[in-house]
Picture 1: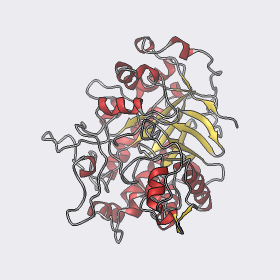
Picture 2: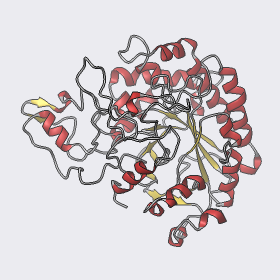
Picture 3: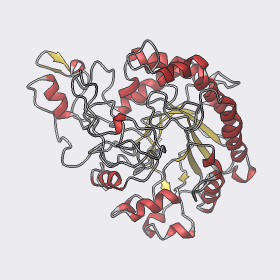
Picture 4: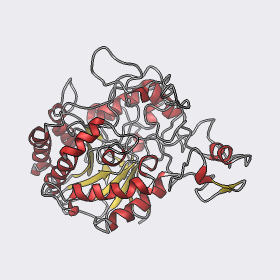
Length: 446
């Protein structure tokens, strides 16, 4: 299938003034019926969240992207009905119908003891509150999505961002193990919670479940990736679910890993040393996200998932344009010089994830850009903060040092800069300075 741009859907009257009239022309015909299709993004008009769109349009230059579709995050029980004046799930679905959209993108992010390896946004549910997660979070969401009024909408659901991978990389005896992740693994709350969500939502004909598979800087090593595939398969069979409830997988959700490295490959050799030995690559099987998504998809099929599963790649913040973007291979004076001079991903460390300095908007949302890739998506709305840069007295946000630009790691270790922007607000809040930088560094350019 050839690549097809994800056309913005028409906004309601209050939002229409934010968009250029020329962006509203040339839509494909609306999708009809509720039978699942191979690629839900093919030919679809994707819902534009008017809350994000309005914030983006208020920024200088933001109107260039304010009409693009982004994910709607359900990160607490109150988000289902809406809180603090924000739209609830039904509000978004009703607005999607008003826009004559075909597809809505949702992200579930409220497992008990969520983000056990980061502690920046642990959420509202304790590890013992799996019953609340099922009854007060998943069940109401499923009831709303099953309403016949929304049967014509395709609903893509990212099931629990940043959850299952932690069970491999942040549990004992791994170096990054945390007591929280050990407890989550011991109780089985992530596996059971994800399985329940897959089963409940997978029973709705117009819902498409996608599991989060992190990114190549997290699970790129076979020693992590292959055990993670077993965890995904176990979750897909837990709590009454089957792998058939997984329509696909999503890579790089809310992260910054570059889509393609253009100027070096993992097979390069410099001065007799393979690129694999460089500090940046560090024996990783991949150097970019597209190669990771393709390989991991094949491995997940081998682990028991349907051969027809697709993948999504979140490209909302992995453009890495601007004046520091390399235009060719780096110097061959050493393997680290070569890789650092070649790589488009300009982070100080491949695992840095919080409000990264120098980041840019990536590839625009598009359907079927590559074989096996259902779409490039902006699942993380650009401009939304990853976490506060300093501890906050309000208790609204669990402070993570990876969001502190002055944090350099353990005092007895090699300095390890976070690359985070200063003056960041709590996770989920609007971060104007970050959005402006994403606009400036967009690649492809705006």
